[in-house]
Length: 113
Length: 113
Image 1 (cartoon, one colour):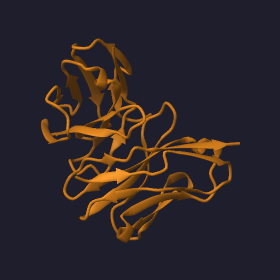
Image 2 (cartoon, chains in turn green, red):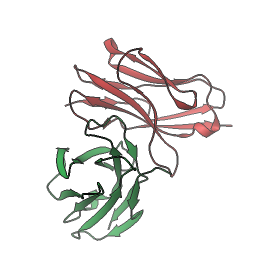
Image 3 (cartoon, chains in turn orange, blue):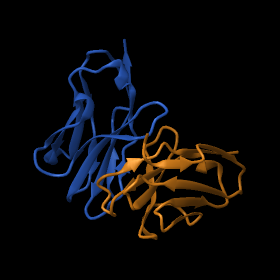
Image 4 (cartoon, helix red, strand yellow):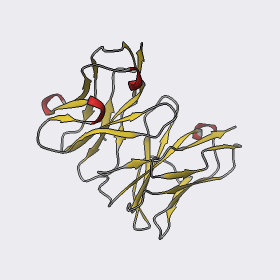
């Protein structure tokens, strides 16, 4: 059990559509970070949410947006999907925004056709 | 921007062989270093981490890594691998005051019986 819960586990979308991925952090954690892992690559940082605000952002376009709720859970939204958005999306939670104790979820596999 | 290089993309070893996976990072300031493992179909798990102090770090499952600041390296080692070590291994770094993880592209380790 990873302690971090992501849903759904798999998703197929069509180009141009919008998608929402969800993450529940490990109990006791208050910070959520999102990563994109393309096939054969290492995870790439998308953004981090702490105290319901986006604290850091990686090199991803504005089509990628997120939200953190008062219970620390988080959503990742991707608009105007491209084929290149097909990847495993990982959520990682931690306590505080220093990121020293990340726990990763099993990810959501997004396929854009 | 910081980067992490893992030069071994795919390593095949027989059981009981010794393992060393290379990891180099590019950043001149303070770094925190991590090795993560991703078993097939499972979430990323932390093997070991270095923040400060003894540059030889011991982790779970008999893994260890050595931080050599002058070489910007953090190589992962295990004296005797087991079939169950078959997985993808990622080196990652947190730099300066940031909390995001920057990952390498990963090394796929295949251990044969």
